[in-house]
Length: 294
View: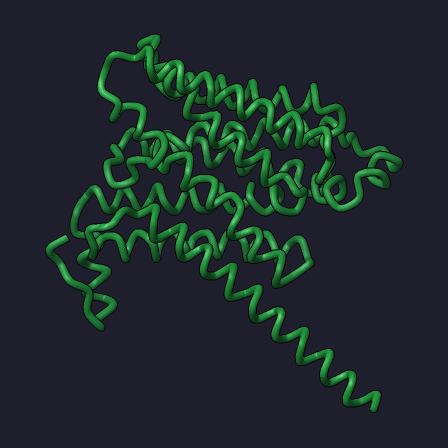
């Protein structure tokens, strides 16, 4: 951009909000960050990062199939993501965190869907830009209709997630005990996968398959390094997701580089720094205990 940042944060904020496309980007970025952060906390808590990766990548062949059939891309996204979530739930038998059968099913579905995506892409005779947009997103080219659709989806998904949050935490932390106490673990797990699939299907067309995966995993991974309490962890995950998104959008506005690069880089750097800080803290704690013992 032609504008340059300054030390005057208020002036910089006014620059960011000067154009309508940036206003839409910030609104949608906020909605996506809250939704991805909330869903992503449970994704990491349940050890289903690989499944989330599969759902985000399945969006590509889904969009390609819809474009090939001259249908709205969101239809293909929703159909493929939902089918993939059902496949993991049905074929994977139990949907427990870290389950080996689930990992095998996720890998098989991912490989097959990406193969279909390549086929659909080759069959499509139009511009490749229509398909590439689903890999990297169009967050700086969002229409008012996209803002409204994202807002509705985010509200519906967050309400549904709030409704199953307590049993979902129980089923994620100790599924065997939860099942013994009457919690419908399988149904809750399936509902969560379908909820994640819907969230990915709608938001991926705006932020891209690569960016949505970063927001689904990195903030939750950071939060779980800092606290083991579910309520605090969920709040911290959403806060970090917002921080990464807002910072990435702001930095990208004043540069010529893509938004996705900054958001993913900031998220990864935060995770690395937190891990280093925890390692140093544990090392200092061990040294202090050794000194007391001596």
